[in-house]
Amino acid sequence: MTTTTISRMQDEVRALARERDAVILAHNYQVPEVQEVADYVGDSLGLSRQAAAADADAIVFCGVHFMAETASILCPGKTVLIPDLDAGCSLAASIDADQLRAWKSEHPGAVVVSYVNTTAEVKAESDYCCTSGNARAVIEAIPEDQQILFLPDMFLGIWLERVTGRKLTVWLGECHVHAGIRPEDIERWQAEAPDAELLVHPECGCASQCMAFANGRTHILSTEGMIDFARRSDKDRFLVATETGIIHRLNKEAPGKTFEAVSEKAICQYMKMITLDKLRDSLRDWRYEVTVPDEIASRARLAITRMVEIA
Ligand code: 13P
Ligand code: SF4
Image (cartoon, rainbow, N blue to C red; front, top):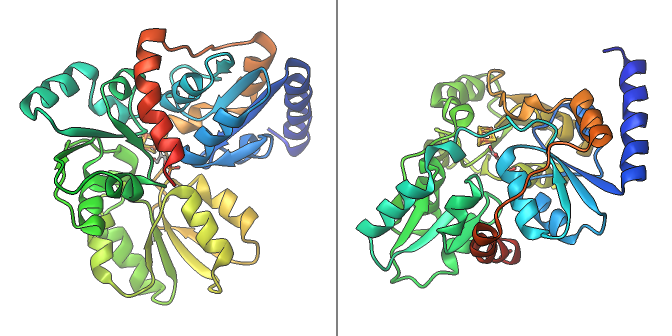
C-alpha cells in the first residue's frame, strides 16, 4: 500500500469509529499503520485497564483473541470486536480448562495464578490473573505459605521464582515467538554492542539466563515497561528481546535513540493477522463480535479484576 492509500484508509477508520462510537485499542506488537490509528496503544495490562475505563459503546481490539475476551469480560454492556477471529496465541493454546481442572485436582488447596495469555475458560478456573506488567506484585500479594500453581508460561514462571524467591509449581507452556529468542542471539548482540542496554521480555527462553549476566544493563520488562524505561533512560542504544512490532512504538516514544531487535525472526503471525483493511472492514461491517458466556465471564471476572487492581 502506498502512503496515500494508508492515510486515506486511516481517515476512513477514524470516521467509522466516530460514527459507530467505537474506541480502537491496539497492542504494542501491531503493525505501525494500525498503531497509528488507535486511540490507545499499550501492553496487556494497560489495554485491560483502558477497556475497563472506556466510555464508548464499542471496543475494537487490535490484538489477539484472549485480549478481546478479557475486554468483553471487563465490559459486559459493550460490543467488543476483533478484526480477525483467527488471531490466536500459541501460549494461550498450551492449556485448556480440562487440563487445568486435572492439574488442580493433583494439588488440592493450591492458589491458581494464570497469566493473561489464557482463554476465558482457563481464567474462570483461576484465582488470580496477571500480566508481565504486574506478575511479580501478584505473586507477592499471596501469603508465603500458600502453594501457587502458575500457568501457562514456564519462562515467566522461572523468572518469577528468581525475583520473588518463591517456589512455584509451573505449567510447561511457552510462546513460540519468545521461546525462539535464544541465549545465542543475546550473546551475539552483546559482543557487537557491549554498551547497549538490553531490554528482555520475561516470556523469552533466555530471560533467566539474561538475569545471570548481572551487568546492570539487562532489564526484564513487559512491553510497556520497555517503553517507559527507554523514555526515562539517559542511554541512547537499546537491544530489544521481544516481538519486533514494538520497535515502531519505541522509536515514536523515545525519538533520537536507537532500538535494535535481537532477533528479526521474532514476529508473531497472530498479531500480524490484524491489518488496516481488516480493521476498516470490522468497523464498517460490525464484525467479528467476541462474547463470553455469562457463566464463564462471571467466574473469570474476579481473577481479572484482581489483575487490573494490583499495580
Ligand atoms: P505484554 O503484556 O508485555 O504486552 O505481553 C503480551 C504478550 O502477548 C507477549 O507476548
Ligand atoms: Fe501469544 Fe506469543 Fe503472540 Fe504474545 S507473541 S500473542 S504470547 S503467540
